[in-house]
Length: 304
Image (cartoon, rainbow, N blue to C red):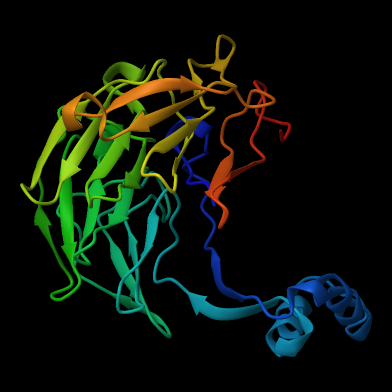
C-alpha cells in the first residue's frame, strides 16, 4: 500500500483511527463466489455487521479479513516493517487530535499491539528498511514543523531500541528505499529543502555504517516506485515533479545498477510506462517481471 505523503494534500486536522486487520489468503480461486455467498448469508448488511461476518468466514472459502484490534494511537504517513521474529514494527507518522504533527511513537505488533521505545526524533513520510542482520534502517521524512530530515536511525530488535545512524547528505521525505542484493540500501528521490524535487540518490552501507551519494536519476521524482529486480538492478517508475497547476507527471522509467561506475552505481533510462502515473504501486513478480498498478492523473481525482 502506498504511503501517505505530506504533499498529497492530507488535512492534518482530520484524524481517523484505523481499524487494523489481518488478511490471509486461502483458496483464492473461490474468493469471488465466497464473498457473494457471505453477502447473501448475512443479508448483505454493511456497517457493524460486516466485521462479524468477516471474522467468522470459513478459511477454506477464500479471503479472510479478521479484526485484530486497534493501535494505541491513530496514525498516517507511518511505516510498518516485518521483523525476522515475526513482530511488526510500526513507527512514527502523524496522528491524534488538534495540530499534532510528526510523532516519535512506536508500537510492536504480535497478537496485539504493545508500546515500545520511541524513535530518537519524530518523523513521518520516512522509510523503514529491514537489513540483512535484522535491524531496521529508518531514514529521512518530515520532522516537527514539517522540517525535512537528513537523519537516520537504526532499530535493534534484540533490545527494541533505536540508535543514531549516519546522516544523509540531503534531507529528504517522500522518497523510496530499496534493500539491494549486497545488503546496502538505495535511498532515492523525494522532496527536499524548499519543497525541491530531488533527482539525487544515496546508498546506506551497513558494513561501514555510512551513507554516500550515488548517481542521480535522469529527472527529479516524488510519488514514484522503486522495485528490486532479480539481477540486482532497481526499476524506478513514474512519479511527478512540481505542484498543481504546473505538476509534471512521468511515464518514464529508469534502471539503477549498483555495480556501474566501479560500484558507485548509476541510473540509465529504460522503456516508458504505457501512461503517465504517480502515487501508484509496483511489485516484482515471481517470474521477474514488475507489475505496476493504479495511481493518479494530474488532477489527483482519477485513478490511472
